[in-house]
Length: 260
Image (tube, rainbow, N blue to C red; front, side, top):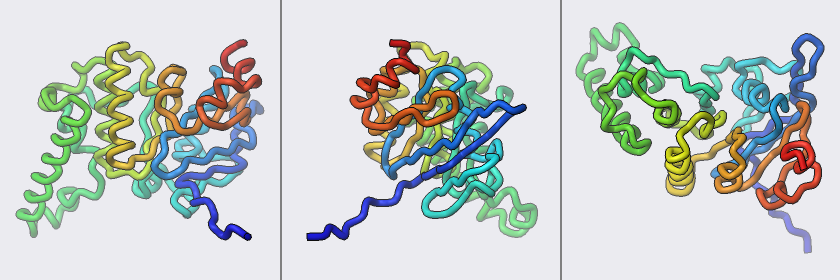
């Protein structure tokens, strides 16, 4: 009997991605897939091309060749802000916050397509603008509660610790109503006590809200505890992919990534 059921298409699928800098191939024919509703990991030794691949997926850097398909549509020719509007948002290794604005103001700036950005809307329909601003503030406070920063809503963002800035960046990403969040080393430089908190929140957003994540992380405990599937890069090329257990026991990965 023929099984006509096909596997669901991945939410994100990149194939044949290449990028060179001065003759050095940082990413070479790389591919990656992220299933909808999953937490997918991307690992590899330093210089493997992980962050460059993130930059290609979000088009902060244009690929020399290759395709990126998101939710059934090509996005590799779009501008970064257009990709964000499609539902793909990212964080960075070093959290980017506006230090002289409050934590709440940082959150509000992340909201997309605000009516108050239109001069004529403000002049002609101030009641609509005021209503939307109230709704955005309520959503921002709800999300700050979810990342554990509600009590710091009116503090300057510059006063946050490194771990708290990572949480704020995640909150800002959620403020955009994304379909996929790319997390670049969410545990890097974070107090060990906060790492468990960050992981718990990622799991909650995934399991309760169905949020999809693609995560770069050097902390293998984080990757192995969070991820459904893991992709491995080495020297800009795909080395392996599989479940966390399969990756842990992959001889090529142990040699290239773990040094065993």
